[in-house]
Length: 201
Image (cartoon, rainbow, N blue to C red; front, top):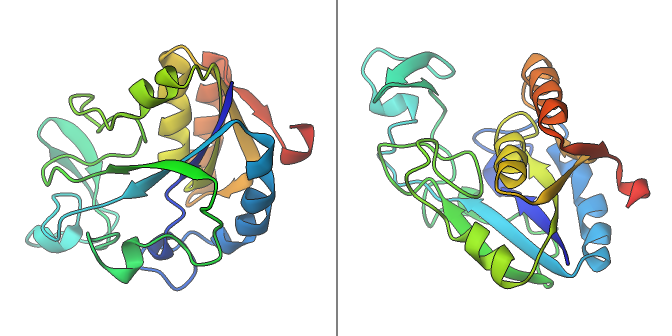
């Protein structure tokens, strides 16, 4: 069984959003057309409380994109984004979610950020995605969405480490930082993740 994971295709990560990924909207038609090729389609959704520790606004004298030590981990400070119940946290209206069988929310613990659709960054809280995929007898996981160098990267990395045969769809994602993206791709290749384009599926 093959599963497609749609990572964080939410208003705040698209142009005009609070943490917009450049050209993020370009992946939508492609992501929509890909869904029919899979047995299972799931989505992750960033779902932060208003006072989340990853928001620069919740730290005195700190600025957006500054890196701090948060409970022993490096943490990039982000603009407030994907706050629970806000329009910014909603899926992009042009995203077809009809085939999505389950949605996995992440980043709800206010003291820990969560990039991966499987775990928080401390690997202490599971979203339930792993158990769901395994209950559906999924063996192969294909990852796409936003942003390529953060949440898509960490989702693919965890999928591979959890024993799924993992594919990263390079043209169905967009990055925040080209340098971070290149580092992420190198790391994923070393782990055995297959990089491919949508026309190879």
